[in-house]
Image (cartoon, rainbow, N blue to C red):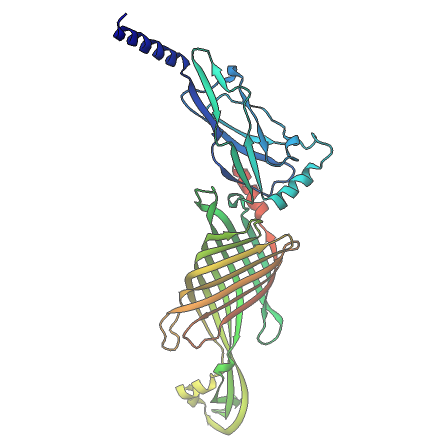
Length: 434
């Protein structure tokens, strides 16, 4: 046999052996390596997972291939309910479930609460499968486990944060003169923390909405604008006579202005920070507010010097000068709209007993009228805040705001109210629509 023939035979045999020993290979793995779990779960504890198969072939139910999942917490593993999972398709989605009665020596709920409070995370391990290959001897597919760990971070997912709808009713307080309830206060407030702007990494929505409508009253006694002036008063007015007696005197006048406010506000919440226990959130929020103000100015007067008393013809009362002097202490009324557009930094803290919100805002706004030669559009600063007791819904709130560069006292509103949750009404409405 020639050398060339021998080499040809050896090559054919080698190729045949190589073909006979060729195997298809597939891998199974978790579809991700990190995911978040809602920490509000209590005794009904389930951990969702997704296992995927990559390759040219997939096992079916007849191949009877099973895989199992365990956790990194040894005390939790004896409670696992479904330890064997059938691998019969390209994607297997399920929940790792637990049976609280499987281990009588350990209180399952206490164990879970301890994990949420102390561990803050759990690792799932994709264990070895019942068989590492399937198919016939001539057409065999090998199975390899890849990405066998999935880290579960235990924190409340902002996707599932509950929207809040509240109605508040109570009273305004006048703090400048004395601590007393001065008028009725009401507000409808909506706080929806997670509905837009999805974070691709965590799957959480970081954008939300805060909006509301309210009615309150603010009182401003402008002692800095106190002035002295001459006024006239009619001391004798006998209609049968053609003359009246008037007194001229110098008085000190202090204006007192009351604003009845009907406001509508909305802000787009963009979450900057969320604590791991979900008690504290910080948002940056584009903010807009429009207020209808009904202004009533009264004048408190104090007599200083009586100048003279005289009788004048009744016809003289119609002169513009005398009318001005007679009406200087009369109240003045007007209605106008003012607006605020800016950027707020909304901070909210909530635990089992209390809820607190701070909402400092800066921007520009329309003061609604020409104020002593100033343009309508002015820079402003505002601070809104409240502290609410959650069991009974008692809320102490405040609103301080001022347009800069104008000689006007800050608007100050302090309220005490009782909240009535509208969540049940909203939920029942949603259910009735289904």
